[in-house]
Image (cartoon, rainbow, N blue to C red):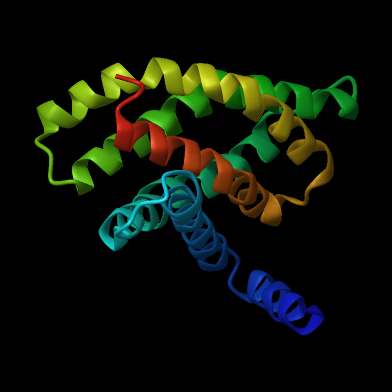
Amino acid sequence: MSALLKAYQRLMQRYPFPTQVLSAGILAASGDAFCQLLIQRNPKYDFVRTARFFGATVCVVAPLQTRWFRFLERHVNSRSAKIISPVKRVIVDQAFGAPFFNTLFLFSLASLEHRKVSTATHIVQHQIGPVLLANYKLWPFVQLFNFYVVPLHYRIVLLQFVGIFWNAYISYATQNRIMA
């Protein structure tokens, strides 16, 4: 295991952006797989659904989220006390990042289901409220830990590890339309 971790750290040092994005995609797909296999116990595994989670994460959400974390790190700081900077980042992240990235992810999933833009927009409008309510029960605490403890280049990876369970929730909720 330590050899695998060292190899991953080398990849993260040499190719940080693609490593972060691909890691996020693999972990997002794992969240959908977790949902299908352990929560829904689907008799027939839907590989296309898992591919949509991977695609939406790798092609849309993770590249922007990776840049978002760099932006927060560089531009959201406290001049008076360094201990306050992570709190400010969480506030900015949850006020602006959470609505943006959740909307983007839901829209991307609906679009990858070959939905019309108007249908995808309608789906997002009905799902974003409950998703954000669930988001605010979990992510501010995760992000506070993330901003205080985790090095910048590992933040997206930590989020996606926690996101395995979050993506399982999103997968379950979007497939069962419990949020609509």
